[in-house]
Length: 392
Image 1 (cartoon, rainbow, N blue to C red):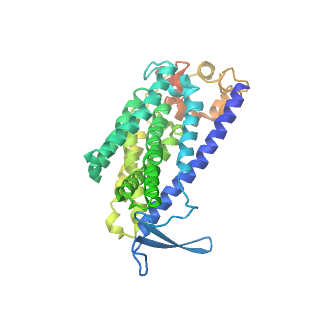
Image 2 (cartoon, helix red, strand yellow):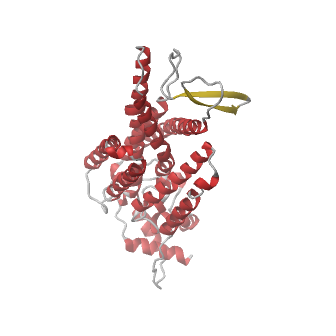
Image 3 (cartoon, one colour):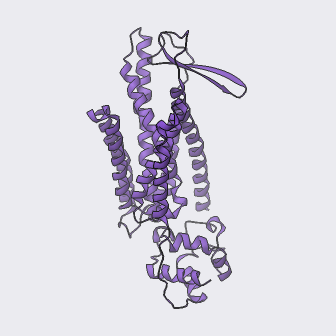
């Protein structure tokens, strides 16, 4: 019953996280696109940077942007912030329910590093806080004034965190923490920089003072960072569904490729929104393609030498009984589940043959299963299972 309640809690938090995330990503994409579509037009107020004519839902919109702010602000000014706040809050709650609550299974892999749950959780929380502090320090330093150098430094920061996570946590735990690391930077950008700076501008206007344009410039810089990080972080958040990513021995290098692919795609879309000539940003397509091909080559299944010996059905059933059927059975004995995950039961040869493609991907081609390798499945046993599958 406890597992049933936790599953529902997990589902509801995940649903809320998805809804909030869609809202946040949507506003990020929209406002960057809006910024890039602004044009100088006749008849605009002298304080207006540009305007954009748009059509949607059967209506026409004319949106104007003030670089600082107009002389008067309405009482019903809309702030876009809760999408970001709720995305992070629900995401961290999901991290607690999925990874902290079940740290031994989802977060810790003794084959990577032997940790107690409290140690793994402490490292997790410290890394999220530390990541923001380092990122913010870089942005505030002289490096922050050089866009190219700043981009390289942030790439190195995320890659360094990825390397750390893959050498501390399980495969699933590592990549989800890359997503949480980047997502925390993005959310605190909104909470700690963008919104406070906008409030300072608004407060200055209310006092009848000229706002400092620097606040808007800093906020725009962080907003652009968020926009370019969105595409990579989305893949990190769904990575635990793909053992070819989480089970790769050098998954931190895959993170590097995902960053390159995602940022290239985002830049292509941004420059398209800006109306640039295609040849000015055409380089993004081959760069993303090279990154994708490299990732596919890296994740291609490695051929195993299964030998010439025949593996019996009985041997495979014994392996399944030892490592899998505590969860994948009609009546699971594991405390973690009340019913077989995804309805997959491995109690008969017919069941195993039916799902052997998935079993191979999760257990032979990677070590994604058993979760956290709690049952201590050895490489020799994985090879034995792979040999039986190859015989079918």
